[in-house]
Length: 130
Image 1 (cartoon, rainbow, N blue to C red):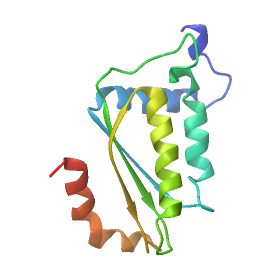
Image 2: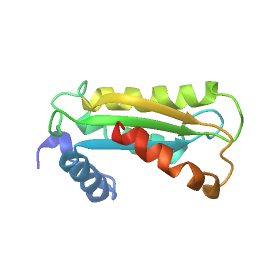
Image 3: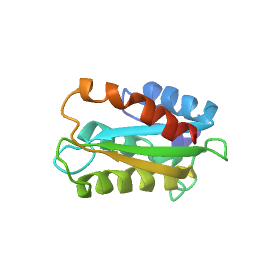
Image 4: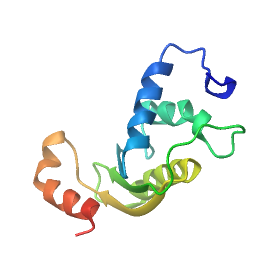
């Protein structure tokens, strides 16, 4: 395994497995709730663990080119500014993996998982380019 992909953390096989799925996919959809007006710490930790694939980290691992991505932000309140911050974080992440962000969506007034269900078709249509 090349040095740039070697990791001392025990989750390296998990991150590699996720990145293998990214490599196989044509479209990546990232959905994030708002935690204090930003992405959750767990998502940020995942992004940080993807540094070996970051195009500003040399040498870096890569995934196949031509990937398209969608960024979706969820928040409990009625206003969009928090969604825009989350979307910006996801788009920044995509940029470093050379995934083209082809669309983003903010969904407000999402308090519980059950609040997403009535909007499921809207999300699917959005991510399908319909």
